[in-house]
Amino acid sequence: MVFSSTLFLFIFLNVVLIVNFLLKELRNIFLLIASLFFYAWGEHALVFIMISSICFNYTFGLLIEHFQNNEQESQTKMMLFAGIAANLSILIYYKYFGFILENISFLGLNFNFNAASIALPVGVSFFTFQNISYLIDVYRKTVKPQKNLVHLGLYISLFPQLIAGPIVRYVDICKEIKHRVITKSLFVEGLIRFIRGMGKKVLIANNLGLIVDKTFAAPTDEIGFVLAWLAIICYSLQIYFDFSGYSDMAIGIGKMLGFNFKENFNYPYIATSVKEFWRRWHISLSTWFRDYLYIPLGGNRKGNFRTYVNLLIVFFITGIWHGASWNFIVWGLFHGTFLLIERNVSFSLPKNLKFLSRIYLLLVVMISWVLFRAETLEYAIGYIKQLFTFAPGTYHYPFVYVNNYSIFILCLGILFATPLRKYLSERFFIPRMNSGVLLTTKFLFYILLFSFSILELSQSTYNPFIYYRF
Image 1: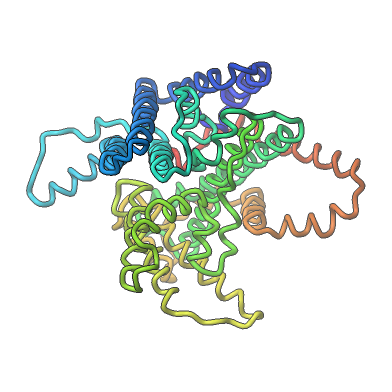
Image 2: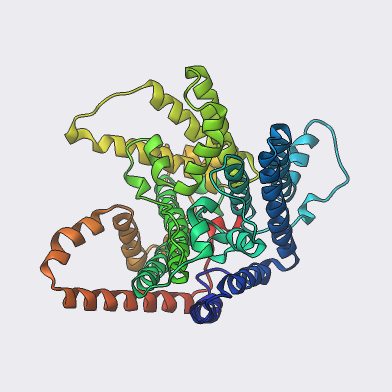
């Protein structure tokens, strides 16, 4: 059940919001049941993996505290490592076991096992990282272990951020799990955020995704220079609006339920370096890697060579976290390599040439998205070659989807990927409107945005979600 489905919008979400508002003491029990139902709707029996995850992380959290209180450091570490290993074992088996066997087979070792029979639980990468951060924070004494199984279960399975993040840390919402207040202003803010995210996903990401899918379905030697660039520009916008739109919807639902999730995107395409890009893109993931992997590895405290190794380790794991494929590994190392280059090659451009830094960043990121989108590494290499030739190509079918409407959507995507809209609104429109006119205009705008999104959903069967498989 995805957020942009009519079943979710008109039935599930409405029931959850109404019942959650009416309940007081039983809110957490209800939300836990609703979240498990939400997960089971699409995953069926795999919901028991989620339930098992809740139970053993609850147990390991209590065991870590128990041994800490008895000053048994070795047993405390053993419980931490056992808890992390238990979480990673689920992730490795369901997401990477087939990939591991496939690569072992190249060494001449074959196993009589059908890895394709393993169903990947949706969102397993996200809730695994949340669980690990919880156990580490308990070990570090950043938080107390949760002694209420329902409360911890709600943290792990809370449906707004369950499928594709943002990765929420227990320390950030533990107080709100115990006690939260749903105010009118917070609910309205959440509703607006949800509609905005839905518009990003349905109106921009879905429409641009059609051009992308049709292009990447063709052999690379048939794709011309113009189509290759058009498709990767569209994909760069599609993945941003698909993922940031989902994050907006998750943050919005959270606010309507009384939770405040942290921001996950901050206009990443206006960055001037790869380092800055990762401060703005999928913030919850990049900060997770910083706090739970990069810094524990030594960060930049142990000399340049060790810093470079640590960065490459982080981006290797960042790549493979996204998917069991060499494409993702190369994608991660591609970003890591440019981070190393930026650490060693520094130059300052005058203000009037600052745009060159942004062009550099966009080129690096768009080329990397080819690795991310292509099904195989061979296809990605072939596609990248087409970006730098001037071949006209023989495959033109995706241009069928290029019309006045899609060009308008493309322009909107480029505009909304920058803070220009926000700047113009705050600088010119808001100061010139009184509060009544501003409130009415805002209300009408979001009613229209929601209506157009629903209309788009009703007349199209194309509603993919890129991060669903991660």
